[in-house]
Structure formats: structure tokens, C-alpha cells
Length: 353
Image 1 (spheres, rainbow, N blue to C red):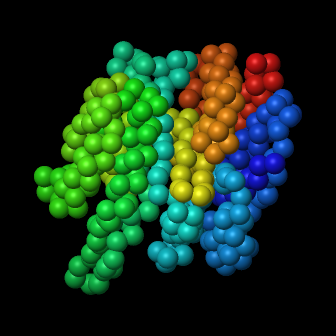
Image 2: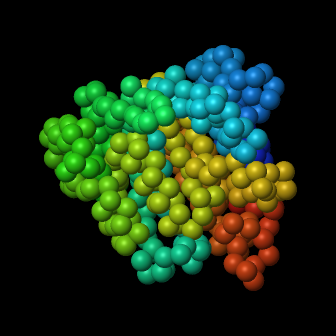
């Protein structure tokens, strides 16, 4: 039996997680699998109930399961809290406590949605790459940090072991794909980035089959928009990865389409990359595909069932090819379907495959 901790979170989180759990239930019935799914509060929902964003109970549950499925956290209601009390701080703490040092974000364009992006179809068609972001080091965690009336300061620091492990994960991912890896840094002006580059090149010695290219982060942002098909696997540090993965997400048409996996040595967390979208929360309008695709990543990376992950992707592709669109990806002339309707179609296509 596989044990999953479900954390719906805030805004549209409960709606998209409910869709994802329907997919898990359908797959369990189809393949004779057993899952235990335990729901816990996190983020603003936890703060309203318990006065803290991440309780010890939720953290312990996440440490004692096979995988965590997260919806979305945050919203205007909690924006005026102090920095250490905000939902985003709780998410950083959860990642740190679980040792989730790598974030995997695929940037894949579904054939049926090639016209949904602001990029020309001939530039976008065939785009399929993975951004691997170091998640527990760098400027988001470096000390000292703070501000006063005259200045603010943060520290960007990386230890050798942090760069080595993310580099090895990236090279391993490239070996399973097209054997091309681009390492993103700013080594021309940051000593921390030169250190990053040196270690990545040392690790490259163990992966002679992989083509390695270094690229400055500003050029990378331009190249992702100019010619996204040139990329296969991208690896970069925490701050740069935060920015580049969102750029990668938007070129595909909608943040509502893209999943992510946060991986550590012993734990894993899966979540869509979109926010809590409080403006449409509770209106049955949210796009659940990113969360459903996050479940596909869960089957591939945690449960080691790539065949079932491929079934989920195929069901999503078939649903989109059938013309169903939620509001975020619908053309003006289309009838936007609800969260429930598009989930019904995905589940139906899964059962029929």
C-alpha cells in the first residue's frame, strides 16, 4: 500500500487536489493498487485553524508517507503577516525539513495547445524540456540576512555537497532523455556562480556521454523565449530556477498546465506550479491538469511506474484533443468547461485506455 499525504491548502487548492485524487482512485481500481490518502491542513487554512502555517502534526505526517500531494498556498488574506508567518515561509520550511533539494519542472507543449501560447506555433511546437532547480540552498536560505532603515542584505552561499548532488541528479535526468544539459549561472560577476560552474564541470567527468553547456542566466531567459526547443535539461541554483521555471511555464500557454516534483533523498512532494488563484476559488473554474500531471510525476519518480504516468499524460492529451478547455486555456469562441467536467473526461479516458 502506498501512503499519500494530501495537502489541499488554500484558494483553488482543494478543488484541483480533489480532481487529482479522483485520478488516483481511478488508477487504483484499474490496476488493483492500494493507496492510503490522509488529508492535512497547511498554509492559510492551517493558520486560520491553528494559528500557524505548518503544524508539527502535518510535518510529521509528511515525514512518514511515500509522497506528499500539495494544492496551493497563500492569498491576500495572509499577505500582511510578518515574513516568518507567511505561507511561503512555511513552504520553504517544509521543503527544508523534508530535505527536498531538487525541484523538477517539465516544460512540455501539448499538441492540442500549441496555439495557446503567445509564442508563434513554429517556435513552440515540439518543446519538451526539464528545469531542475536547486531548492534548499542559495540566497533564500543564506545567512546573514535582514534589513534596517538604511540597507537590506541577503547572502548567497552554496556548499560543495549541495552543488554535487543537484548536478548528479541533473546529469542522471539528461542520461534518460537526449543527453544534453545546460547549467545556468552568472559566473562572470558572482563568485558563488563560478564555484557552482567548477563543481558542475567536475561532476561532468562521470558523465562523458552528456553534452554540457554553460549559459548565463540573462541569456538563458532570452533563449527560452527565442528558441525553447534547443533545451533538454536545465540545471540551476535556487533563485535563478525560481525565475526561469516560471518563464518556461508561461511559454507553454498557462501555468495551470504544468506540474512539478520536489525530490529529496527520502521524501518527495508533488504540486502544480500555479498559485492559489483566490479570485476563482470555489467557482469550479480552476484548471486541474497541472495537479493531475503532478500525480503522473508521482507515479514515475516515487512509485516507479512510468507506464501509469504515461497513461495519465495520454489521457490529458486525449482530453485536450477532444476540444475541452477550462477558462484559462480556452479561446474566446470556445465554451469553457468546469473543473469537474474536464476531470470527468480525464478519468473517462483513463478508464478507456
